[in-house]
Image 1 (cartoon, rainbow, N blue to C red):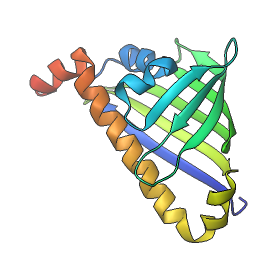
Image 2: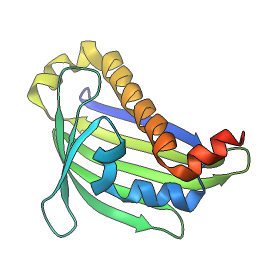
Image 3: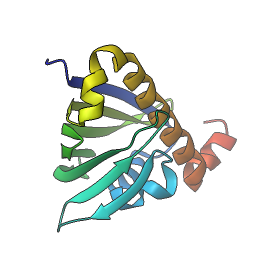
Length: 157
């Protein structure tokens, strides 16, 4: 891995039904309505969109997302990224008997934004922290905003 490459992984365990979680994650245009770190999504082609992201640290990332895999039967989503980050992002949603579902996230990217590339060697831990904050906020708000999740949380699921 080169010094500008970075990998992020996460798992969201939620009381959502797997198909509900998949549908919410597949609706990229809807991300700004429930995911605080996704500032905007703008369609720029038939299948492509431009996504602006900002979490805790004082910088925005703009990426072009192009779907590569959209498989509702297997509940897999994958997109190629280009722009301030280049690489891929993948969600895999599976049933989880204890929680409802587990949504596994994997992102493998190379930082291309010049200002961030300069700081990569020293700031890598802060980039991981920034990503963790963004993911935690997304999961938390998703649970509150999806009625099925809120109901299952109240029931103690």
